[in-house]
Image (cartoon, rainbow, N blue to C red; front, side, top):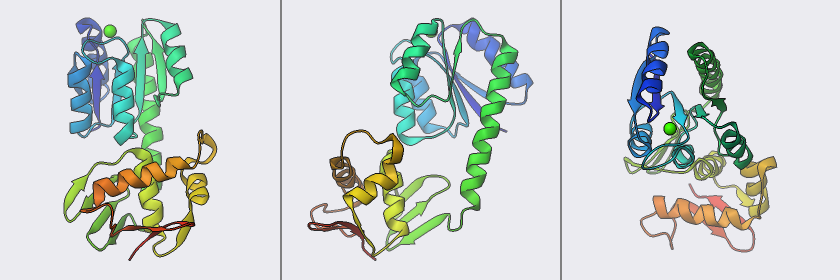
Length: 230
Ligand code: CA
């Protein structure tokens, strides 16, 4: 059963959303503040989040940003003010949809179903891709679940760090320039410059390497770029 997390501080609204979604066969977890919502989103195996913007402790912007760093599940943001949602959209926070309160519960159910269906297709497409799991030395990457283990210990990566690591690990022993990596991972959404690549490689190493100054996995080819060592 698909599990939905509702993060909403207004009890009556949370209950209404919960009832309608449960009637439609979803399992629901409700959190009434941003902090517990964020923790639950990161800890539990959640399939979709209905996220209120104005919340105690940690607001919806922050929750969205934190969750997006590690998960690509659909996030539907709700707010009482349309202007706030326009702002979120403008900020490119990574929410998948926006709804202005008050909305009809059936509208919410319809949108939840649409996003679930889209996300399932996305996951299915990733699964049909050959080689879901990459194993090189003590590194194990589960591409479908987007999880990384080094020596059996799970390491947390942001979306871009993960994409960069997977790209390099999928092309072992091949040298890529920073420009090539930047184009491959950031593509059209790219803003800023190629030093972003250097920064991300540094962060990946800090998470994977016992001694980041003598990397076992991603090697620096001076004056050229990087290579994943086998
Ligand atoms: Ca609120």
